[in-house]
Image (cartoon, rainbow, N blue to C red; front, side, top):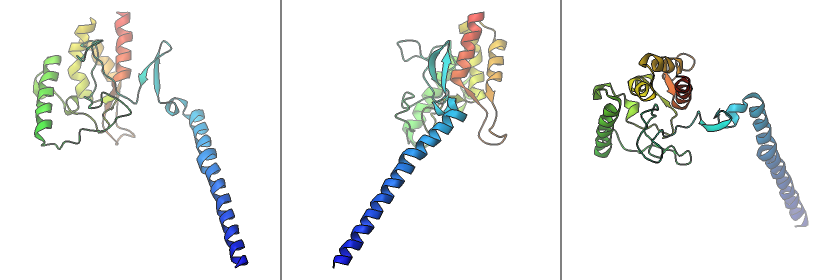
Amino acid sequence: MNNSVVNSGRMVWAALRMLLVLTVVTGILYPLAITGIGKALFNDKANGSIVKVDGKEVGSSLIGQSWNIKGTDKPDPKWFQGRPSNSGYDPLSTGSSQLGADDPTLVKAVKAAKKQVADFNGVPESAVPKDAVTGSASAIDPDISPDYADIQVKRVAQANGLTAAQVQKLVNDHTDGRTAGFMGEPHVNVLELNIALRALADKS
């Protein structure tokens, strides 16, 4: 009986020591090591890919944001607009609407959005790409398709006193191709594009 109790006590003590060691290694040392390596080799990405202009943080290249007229919920014609977001681009509340492609509510919303985007950019509804009227799975996608950027060029150019050719060049320069040449689709980061647009407009 006594031997049994002693053996059980030894096993419990060994288990507790192992738990303590593994907690320190996997819960403290390993995360600190990985964080340190990340900051040393990929400092920008490890810190959220924050974008700064004139030393001021203006957003993250990984998170979309609204480009509305200040104090309103109306899109500002001076800026390229991103994909719609059900969460208001809130990174703490990501996710799609979960509505099926043939859901009447979604179909109605997409039709209304398509007309709105077409009217806003002065293009026919047939020219409006899918990403202009549908949100991404995360609801915070920072990128748009080159097609969506292209239909905004004329409107953005007029609102900023620039030529369409100048703005189109910005779009072309900020269009990234498929990752490794075959993964994903070509895309344009809206924040980076609008930063370049502001710089060009300020020079004009």
